[in-house]
Image (cartoon, rainbow, N blue to C red; front, side, top):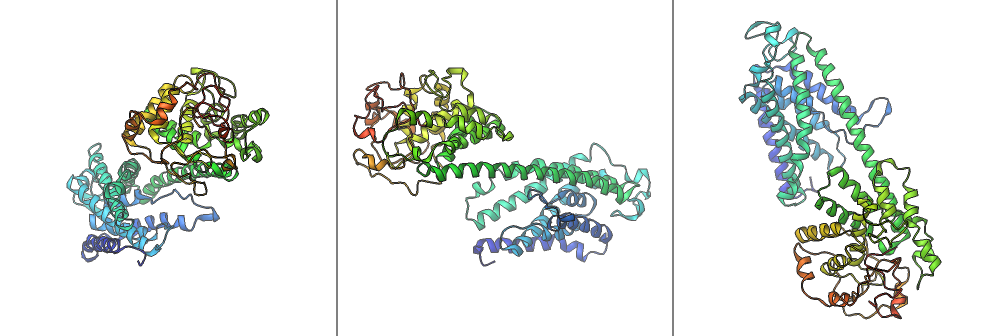
Length: 546
């Protein structure tokens, strides 16, 4: 409790008091169906404890959350206060991975009790108990062996389908909304997040799973009221629990995929420390382009992964070349230009990458055919490779390197627009420009802490300043002026592109986007050749990083 802010402590205390108020009528009432409460509480508690103490020593997937069908079955079978009481033991015994554990357990128990009570109220007001039917066979239900309609029998337990679906669905939605609302409030109170940020996406992510749990809970309640009683209800619950287990296994596998990607990126960062964080930012920019193009969520994730892993082939390039002082020889250039093929071979056996492998292989192709490794042109280049190429060049220009200073976002976008049609796909460039104009550029920087930041107004960087520098692209003709620009607000890009700045005027002197091979910029050569000389060997096109 001491680690929580005072507002969060007060909020948890209010939730506990509210939960006690919800269960009080069941504790003090004389007609409380204790046998049903006991059975359902034990079932829910068992579903939660099996995650803490898995059978036969097998590890339970971390994504296996609370098994709410039992709680929702209690909502459909019992009065609201009794349903709130059923939710308490399982909520208190649920899996907790962060501290303070006992506070979190109390919070989960109170939260689920409040949600169950609210769902029960909604279900009752919509006529759910009458639609489900009264009575129970064998005395295991909430009304005993006889209901108001007489002895138990088919007429006493047959539910009124499909009308009963309406109050059941409304109860499941209410249960979900209360849980997410309480979660959002505690996040805002404990982590001091803005309310809109704390609630963003909680309900939309949770609604569908809770509705599925509600359907399973309704089937369990119907079978509980049937002549077959509790055994039939358990048979309904078993396949649902197995489905949740399988779904949790999927999340566990997805987490393993993410860990694999992080390990590969970390290996590249360790070897090539001068571009640390570059991969994550390229993935972020690639996702922005894909979203602007209207790609679906699944493909958008593939694009993001492709951006993150685009330089994984540098693991196959000798470290001495990545960190070499001075210009590269033609043979060394050819070796570095093999890194897309190295990367493709490295990830060939990783099945979940799918289309991302093609982007890794072709992200240095140019639409005019002068790129590498295969000199593809236009539509021959895979779509995701064209996306990653633009994102890669953009981050290379807007990131501070040990041998160059970050350029303003607007200048970088103008350079991309100037090279659209020769080096980059114009549609991809336009998508990035539109996305940044609307959202701004706020990169998630995880690097550059150990890089030399060149102060504004500094002259050319001598060859010594390029020690260990990876040859990232420096667009020819664009003077390195202006303060480092790691972030830009929405709309700032368009203002910078129309301001007639020095870098844009310098870039207009020639069109280095055509007829230039574009392997790697040579920081040391920049000290001996005039920057921006069109057609000079040391002046590659925008984003022509190796």
